[in-house]
Length: 346
Image 1 (spheres, rainbow, N blue to C red):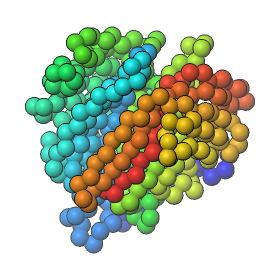
Image 2 (image 1 turned 90 degrees about the horizontal axis):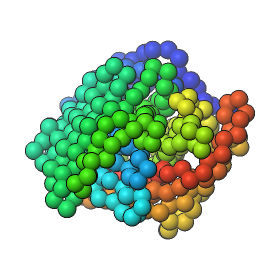
Image 3 (image 1 turned 45 degrees about the vertical axis):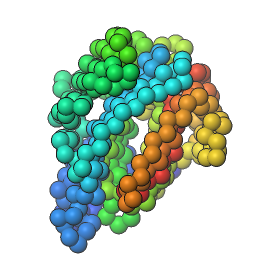
Image 4 (image 1 turned 180 degrees about the vertical axis):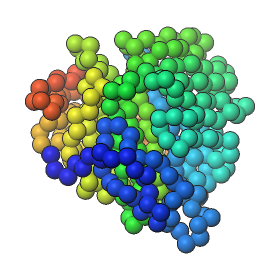
């Protein structure tokens, strides 16, 4: 597998001059997110307006996908939640837009601290403690005047691996990201007047933890899933391409029972004139071949002049196979997940 540099040493993310100390990937967090060293504008007081930070959680259950996000993209905070109904093939979403990120708090690193927004229209808190991620959510007027509420516990044992990536963007811009798949979920979610109980044998959580400084015009494709094989093993997918220099490493991997199996380049083939057409994904070494058949397009658009964003997040089913590091072929059938295309000026 070419050009997949694994980061093995613990270091700060940024040098004193704002450049990256390293680029590559690791199965566990290795770098301290010292964004105070960021240096990409002559007028340093403007730099915080270009730094982007978010925590995005998803919970996959047999019938629904629940998602909760707290983000601060510098000049704007966005807090949102959405629910995808697999049987009805519908979704509902609510978003709060917060000038200059007012009220949003995000921790320095992904392994400790609390991410929160304690607002009156919505209150969200994500905390990490004792091998567990706790999500508390109350959105009083979410859908059909019913509240969306949740108390969720995601188990993350010390041996559970994740996709940690740092890559440069232009000279002193960068993307620092952690993606965790297949965290067993306990707890409950109240939705449309009904309490949905979460159990580890049927509900799994995923996290997209992102920090960085992007180019103003950005594009990416991201595909992900957290589910179960027929034998009960957990299987996660994380694939993507787009912005940034991936010569040191890609974010492509699959996760079998909490262990990362790293992949190199993956070729995506899809029709952006009709996102419902089947997508195909194939790795350059033949270790992954998948067909993704969408059944729902979650479209999110923002257009406030200087800031624009359009994402088509397609939910659907994955079919195909992956091959482990030891050469075992794993067949994937009817695995629910998503694949998205995102353009942004931000």
